[in-house]
Image 1 (cartoon, rainbow, N blue to C red):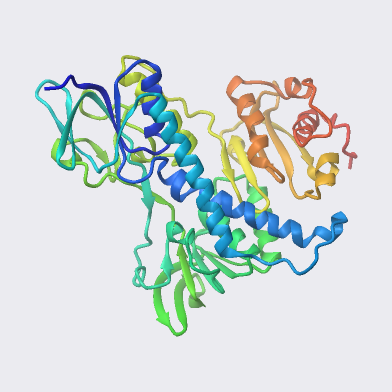
Image 2 (image 1 turned 180 degrees about the vertical axis):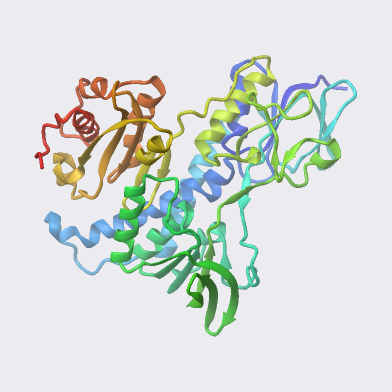
Length: 466
């Protein structure tokens, strides 16, 4: 029999392919099993394709305002949905090809087949892939997640879709009903609003984006409603029915039952761990419902077996999965490293963007922490005014006595990029004074972070005192 591989990784998403590449960097012989395209949900059916489409929508909105920038366009601007979808596919294929190239350069043995796992008497692992059987000393399960389908009558009717199908619709919906006012639902609501759909969002909670800075979630709600997006709060979907020429969504509120119609219904109720078909039940692996139970080193309940990414539940974010992949690979090869999820930035690609890291002001107060808050609006920032993107602000949440940064939250242009400075500040325990004393280039958007840091001490330079 051939010499066993050092490591087998099941799943080629952000956790799996990163684990394989890290193992290769450490000199391990590694094989990676992926039944579809490498890159997983994020690259193929999630983060990347949605952002490619949202970028198309941003360009469309900018061109509609071209005259205000002194740019003359020869005719009306319109959305070419098929070209947008084609471009999205081109972006995805470019990145998939890049990951494949990285795996090849790392000499990772990529096996394009669904895999099943079984334990060997010598403590290793046997992986079945079609008609072939492979052997590895250690294994990492990184099978990711799939869209959760709302368990209501009619959830499988024609025209009822998940985020996966929304990326490849044949046409822009005329009337789109979205079940779920979470990150996925609101990103798609912004996208299709920009493309001309009449959008209705049904959210069962009393507000949208509950984990987000409450001021920003309330502001986004106001902005979207002002644009004509209908957002119904406290509305629990009860059933979906055929109603020529489209669909009717019945929902329950404290005031009683009502209904809304549309030609397309998007179920945006989150993701669930994907762990089916691997043979986990036969192995007797401990589970947390659908998720694989792991300790802080990402070890599963059997020796030599690890799990990483969405399949372990928790924060289902691609950057968390990649961190998992690195830690799991290192531990599988002999390290004893614990995962550190104390500083996880979250980015929401709505229009405008929202991003946050660390504690919100409300969360800090709930913990009994006295806070000092610095804020700076983009409406007072030169670069934002020049860009014509003045909505939103930077909020810096600090411990009152020391000025230590506990959290940073941003709504506005390039929030997803600006949050990196906040993540570093929270992780390193920096103070607002240290941020303020760091020279920020002018004219740039990060100047808003420096001004917010000065604002913690009442010293913001470019903000009038009220």
